Amino acid sequence: MKFLVQECYSKKSKNWTVRLVKEDKDCSYIIEMAEKIFVLGVNDKHGIYKSAVPEEEDSRRL
Image 1 (spheres, rainbow, N blue to C red):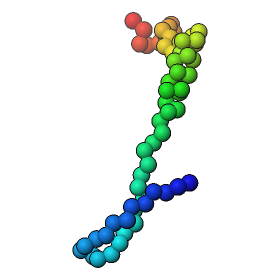
Image 2 (cartoon, rainbow, N blue to C red):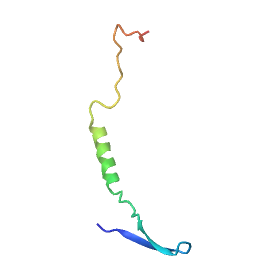
Image 3 (tube, helix red, strand yellow):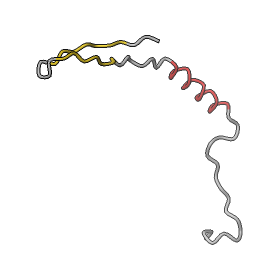
Image 4 (cartoon, one colour):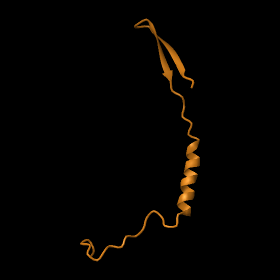
């Protein structure tokens, strides 16, 4: 694992400081993950949302 560092001289305190430089994230996996989710959603026989049938003794039933 490589760490990128940046050295910076402070004129006020007259010393050097070393800071880690953040690397850009590799988000190449997001496209593959979105494709898998889409395929699972298309091939799902039941679906996410189902209409609920209230029971006879349910007080919310009108």
